[in-house]
Amino acid sequence: MAFKDGYNSRDLPLGYQQITDLSEVTTLGVPNGARFAMISVDGQMVRWTDDGQTPTATFGMPAGVGITLVYEGDLSLLRFIEAASGAILNISYYA
Image 1: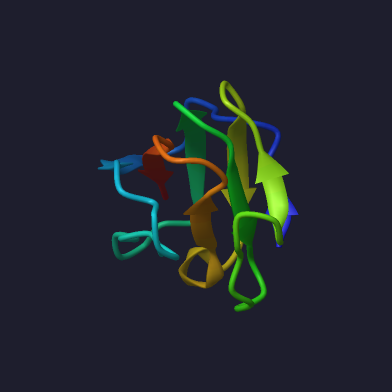
Image 2: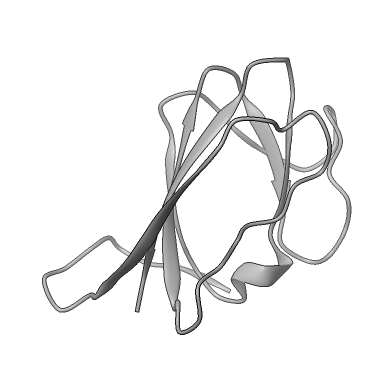
């Protein structure tokens, strides 16, 4: 796992996803060939894990509203849950 410095012009966009129901543990719908994702948090704070563990409203790495995670690694291992009702994730995938 690594955190990428950010998007650059050589990165190929592969798609966008919005997740509006995070009341249960949620995984991403990762497109084939995605190397990294930009994940923006809206509405409410979320918790996430990237090691296959299950996050809860009080367990996992916190990500607050307005935070954008740029995550490079095995995107299929990411798990998210809202810390309070109303969280939304906006995700852009890149090759």
